[in-house]
Each structure stands twice: as C-alpha cells, then as structure tokens.
Image (cartoon, rainbow, N blue to C red; front, side, top):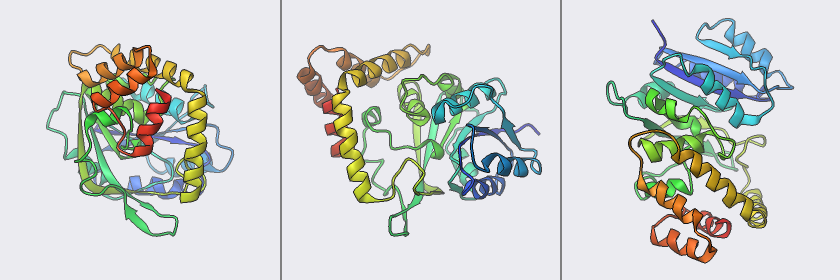
Length: 302
C-alpha cells in the first residue's frame, strides 16, 4: 500500500536525542507513513544513528542532497522539493529532538475532511519542559481562541513540528523563500493567506527544551536574548522592512484563486512611506502580536 503521510525531518548534530524521536515515529498507531531525513553535514554520530535505524525500517529514506550547509530552512526546502511529485496526501514536519506520542499522526488526520482539496493546515498542542525540569502543556485552552488570525502575520505560535498540511497546501508552500524566518512561519503565512487553519487542542508530542535548540531553557537568558535581539533589530530595522516587503511580495505572487485581505492590508501598510503612519495603520487594522513584546518589536521594526 502506498504511504499516505509524508514526514520530513531535518537533522544536524542530534546524536543525543535522534534515536528516541525515530522510535516514537516508528511506534505511531497510524502506520501508513514514510519518513524522509535530510542531514545537514552533522559532525557527530547523527548520520550513523539514522542509518542504523533506516536499514531496519523500509519506511525511512535518507535523502543525500548535494548542496548542504544551508541550515534548517534550506534543509526543509530541499525535502519539500524532493517529495513534491510523490503524490502524498499529507505532509508533516519533525524536529530531531522531540518525542511524538503514539497517536500524533492519527489525531492530526481527524481534523481533515475526507478528500479535502482546499489548502488546509492543522496544528496541535504539545508539552515541553520548564527550567526546573517539570513538564507543562504549552497552550492553555483559551490561548488560540482569544487570538485573531491577523496576529499570525506578526507572531506565529504554531511550530512546524506540530503541523500537518494537505497536498493542496503543500503545492503552495514548496518554494520556501530565503526571506522567510523559517519553514513553519512560511507555511503559516501561506495557509493564512490562501487556505484555512485548524487547531487541535490536544497534546500530541513532547518538545524538549535543552541547551542546543533554538528555545533557551533559562528565563533570564531568554530576557537577555530578547533585549539583545530588540536592539539588533531596531538597528537593522530598514533591512527588516525591506526583507518583509520582499517576503510579502513573494507570498502574494502565489497564483491561487482565493486570498485573505488581511495579508494584502499588511503589505500595503508596509509600503507606506512614514513610520508613524505605518504604526497607526497597524493598530487601526488590529494587526499586532499576541504578546506585548511582540507588538513593541513590530512597531520598532516597521
């Protein structure tokens, strides 16, 4: 039977956690999947581990790209291009250091309508570890309900490792531009503009916070990181706006019959000449972050 679900995993120096994550995918209660792994020149034993697992599991394929070293965004871009013409019905994205709960794939599939041809993205809840080692659920029950879809333009809180997209959306997102912050942010922008987004308020995976991943585990370090980033972003605000204009231009150039006006409005605001006018228009159109620091960052950058 042809695999119905395609899972894409980008790896780099993940020897400490990769085996557990591979096993959690192999142990899914939904078995009709195929996993494609792209490694970005790991210097530890990551490739050795994934090869040892793949040789025993025919649902895992290691993709050997000629061009490497482009980071996670480029890795996922090449993986999407690699599977583009394989006719999978659904695509998921996996981090190398998470642990999927046994029903992650099957639960995500339940939010798709049968033979759904409209571009659709589903994302789920997850747990992660706190600095003190305790485990907590990321989203409260009211978190997504209180948020406007416009806020996704500013603050994408849905991580790629919680997402599943259908084939119709996969066709639209496959060419991830260099200007995108990351692959999941691009997928969210495309889904917001041309498709629909569904949230499953159920925990389907454990996202590990550790010293090597993007999310720092210490609140004091997070604060220092945010302040440094804020000063850096403000210093480079002209480059940021230029990047956003290019990104929005590429986003709105996608050829599809339906699109949300919120994205068009955001793009038009970016094009306005005066900064204060841009900030006023953002506020009037209710385009701001879910968190205050995200809103302030947007105002400084825009």
